[in-house]
Length: 441
Image (cartoon, rainbow, N blue to C red; front, side, top):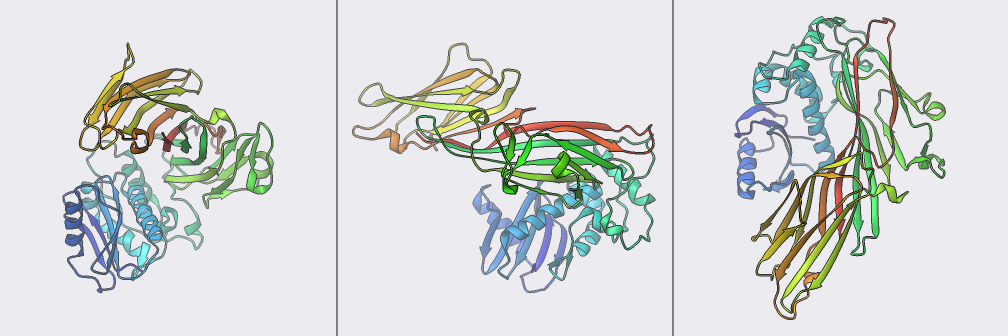
């Protein structure tokens, strides 16, 4: 049960304000903003002030805020606010302060349909189409093609729809000559791994998803085929050499009639962005699933000077590369300084040291597969100290475009349409990135 809902601009001004129950002070938005200022940018999405629970999601600089006096599950409210951001983006095309202010009537209508007296009803773009009749206003901002497409779709959609309309996706007008027809499919692997000082894997998991952005005109049926050797462990299937997933779940629009036999997903995609499939791998299946190996070596140069030599090896094929690679670690808080030395001839690499936090950041712009890089850090400690215990873990952030450690792949994407001239653009991409990649020293 939600008491108030706000959408706040980056400068703190209120764009949307809904007070459902009248049991929370009217100045709750100001209290929320003061709390953010006090935390100096390190704000938490959920906190309590004077018995009022504040739950917030920040998207494109905008604050989507909900308040309540009741003990509401925080994850449920955060998911609701996140879905609200997606619905707003689906209807107005671009999510920013200007687009919200120009379409505030439409946004209020969406909010009224999504929640009734503080109780969530429906936050699905497809289902809301049957009840929302305001048309989005065009926004003169680069990249607003989506807004124009959806605006035309809403203009052409009939105002009176059948009782089954809530089960249908938003249908775009059938004018294929004037607007782009395209669909994007992203297969994303998010790795969480922990290593000990010897480089051995202690914990490993992959939380992945297949995300889809559909800007197709009409309501075509899609056939998306996955690996033939895909096995779901929770269903009692698996075997050597197979692409094995522990758990999967699918979007409500997916028909699974052909999934068990042909590993094919059949669907009529709703317009906009949505998660087609989530999957989880809870343990390491093969050493090839480790994209980077971290090897720390600590040596005592003198009684007071220590050296940490860090080597990172890329184990994935050489035709791929790691992008935005950053390695973070801290020296002991008792140390009086630190110097960082990159390997000879290092290109596209940099390092920085923050004396206030004792943190060192090593950045590698492009890390090619099957290569290795090293960095050396020297620091001074007091006599009798144990630097290995005082140092924090080594963490790593990275992205590997067009590479999936899970080996889950889209084999083909077929759009079933009677008109042979209907040939939209199809984009299939994959990405692996670090969710939590940590090595204990």
